[in-house]
Length: 528
Image (cartoon, rainbow, N blue to C red):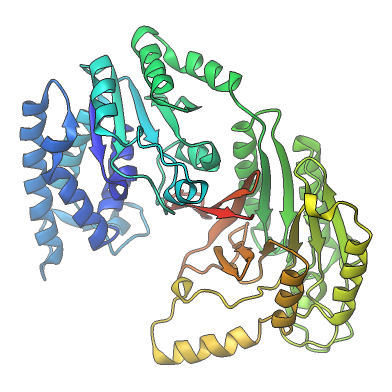
């Protein structure tokens, strides 16, 4: 059985295969765009579904579509019907959403269509940006001819084949279905196929051409338990990859920070369980590891970093944040700053021979600034120049600048501005948080061939560029404060390197432990 669909409905359709009706319901009603996309999917169901039970399924889907249309009319009416109740009434803190029993049961019926196959699969084409920049545009993963060949192998309900109709650009996935994060973490290995079953067991297998793809689906056809065999094949052809885990703004010492620390450690553990033993990984921490520089907070961070080192061999590459040297991160009297015990002198260089990377570490909290502002200073720039002059074969290395403060203003799209005075406050607040000599710093980076900047500070994950320099920001990795209004979101970046290609995945999760929200947004960057 096959289903051809647009990418804006991918996560919703995949959630249906797991019977995650509530997650699907949240997806559909998260915005007018999501609702419209899903209704188009239902309307075009006959044209996009490949099944030997198509007439039966189409009748069911037409009925479901009518119910969801009525449901939206109820939601848009002034008076909610008796069948509607708020999520808050049943334990969810989402009072802006209302559920309708008939609609939920209809989605359950739709879920039955997609979940009746024992094995499910999602085709993962190479991203548009990767194809364009690498002058490589295979279309077999999105071709309808490919779908027909795969459906010929699985005429009945032996396997569900989900095929996007276009190659992905930079996607944001909300409330991601189980194991999709594993595929996104390995976006540099696409094209690939993600297989899974009802027990959430999975196999992620890269493919090179149509012959390899057909072979995988032949295995699913003949094997009673195909996932172990698919993982064996994937492992044989797996090559080592280079990764940076970028975390920031931990603010240890705050209330409940130990709970947040445990969730972050579990996230890192989940990542390592999806890696091969040949993968090389570095942990980069861009400051504010404590909320205020005191013995108890520093001890919590020290134990956290030691745990990661003992479990995974991760020795953090660390720079200072304003909270690491000033009480609550505010420099009222510059010159009386304290320094945490866990870092060395700045500037300095950390070398990774495996990834051919030089991490240029800066302290953006030099003397002479007030509030939460930062500054690099001429002394550090000249010092780093001297260190680089001592390096041999510098052209063989990727140069990565690491600091705490943001070098460019936070993108407007991440703000929560609602009123004119919020805008004025935003401008004022930006001035109290900025890097004072950011222009000179960026000019120095461009002059010295630095391709990448990693930073934190504003608790806002984003990626942007300035000239030839790519800038990757991290949110708070323990969910302290947030760029999302009234929501605290645990955030970290996963950066993979493959030759001159860098894939950045922003991972954002609700820090309450409910996993109501899970945002994964991959970007492909070319560093040549």
